[in-house]
Length: 275
Image (tube, rainbow, N blue to C red):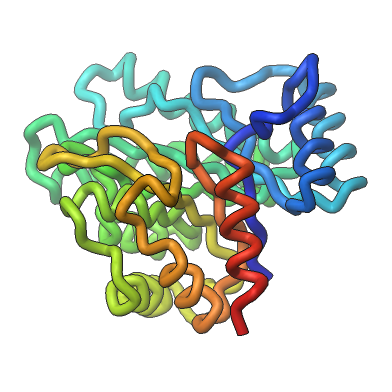
């Protein structure tokens, strides 16, 4: 089953807003998933997380989460690297209490270094994070995301290789891949290639619980610039949904459109109409 999620509380969430009201609004809209956006900071109240879990479970809403943007698992300064690892661990720990299945993480920047060397640095940091898995987040997936700029660690191959090594699964952002390559990854054949490569690395069963991101996107030769509404971009979103349906992909597709629930509902309606 593929669920469609807003990236955070819907724009139409009534006052006072917040995650709990967002979850309730998602249900009212007829959606069945939401991504909690901890992109600035990770909350620290277990009680609040327990209330999120209770509310989401009661309404049948599947949750994912997004870790802070301020993460670089290839930081040259030990202080910055340690802080990044702590932020990711904290996000995973809070996600466990909140009942979120997977946490999206922006892995690293290359910082002018050789890609192979950066891979080893990120791998070492992942080991440091995952040593806490059994104790702090046994049920939560660490999802390294495909990134939208050539300066960022996060090609499809990099995140799949890393995921295979640790028995986790990545966050596949088709919009980021489209922007990073200045217009590729935007046809049925390319969408199928991505799913095929994912299956090759992680196995056919892995397709049943994918963590996906999508939206329209503006880009330059330097990659991602900003997210756009689906119909104000060059995104071949209907073709993507058709491929996901044909390949029987399940999990959660998070819509990062600036018009949030409008595009999330648009995709859900289109997907439901497909044979």
